[in-house]
Image (cartoon, rainbow, N blue to C red):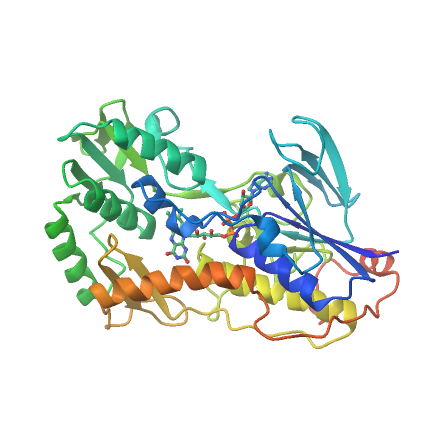
Length: 411
Ligand SMILES: Cc1cc2nc3c(=O)[nH]c(=O)nc-3n(C[C@H](O)[C@H](O)[C@H](O)COP(=O)(O)OP(=O)(O)OC[C@H]3O[C@@H](n4cnc5c(N)ncnc54)[C@H](O)[C@@H]3O)c2cc1C
């Protein structure tokens, strides 16, 4: 019987893991199935561009997986049962792979790679769920695009959140719609995680783009026409874009898997669940330590190497090979500031700003290259030709069940 590898989620992490696994294992020994709610690979790092009116290249997952032997199931994952080793699926409207829309199915696995990513965290602040727009997923970005299209000149847009996504979103909107009044509300100081050079460039760019910055603005409520801050200020907003926080899918927390407070699956340095050795987790859905023991941040910069590490670890364990040791540290944070400007903040391996932060047109070209390379790497997760290896572990299912909960002794 073939070993069944199921990968949930075809974002940067899941699609990379699926392609790499299928390219490295012999098709006679394994079935590799990638489950995703949409038939396309979505370049999530460009969704602020979508919101600002740009069209992205369509990337059907069938093309991404072409030639690998992996199978695509277009369906929504509704639950995982880690004791029975099954995944519950529901057909998305118009999806193939499960049946008619709304019908359900169950998929068994021997090895699971969980990569369902994250979405906007709408909890906690009143009014966000009702009134705020977002760029965290494609449907949200398209909705925001439509709303921005309805705004007449002088319309007021407030982006809440001074992290990477907020900065990129506000720049993109301000550049595309110079006729709008665009503002950014940040809880601390603008770009206070950047080096002084990076912060100076950010301020200069926002000045050029006409972005009003509300610093130390702790937003406590979002209304239909304004956002309210803790110190009693009301910032007028015809459109509020919420970027202050991402949350993971609650599916993992509903299982017996060990998860963090935020619901991310806790994994070891091979990306394997610390509680269930037949489950791996990668990308935003996983909590993994970086080089100095600090958790990796939710990013595709972490998600792709995590996927390689997970895939190569699965291959090593199934084929009796050596466990990999992928470097999971950071080099830079690449922040687009519209289409013609960017800051490349150089960072330490554990993501702290170094003094250098090149910026401007060349930096924008570099950031564009980084985004294009990320999509290229998803479709080419194994940059060298590799022999498809045969499994040496016969009866892996039985062996995994009898392994100890911690993997420390199995490396
Ligand atoms: C606007 C924006 C800009 C960003 N810019 C950068 C950047 O410049 N650099 C950087 O490193 N990071 C950036 N990020 C963060 C980065 O996009 C994420 O960290 C990355 O996408 C995480 O990859 P992932 O594979 O874990 O999850 P995702 O890319 O979110 O993929 C998850 C996949 O799972 C699918 N899925 C979810 N739930 C289900 C379900 N129930 N059933 C079936 N399928 C499901 C989704 O459809 C999706 O295909 C940005 C994010 C945003 C929103």
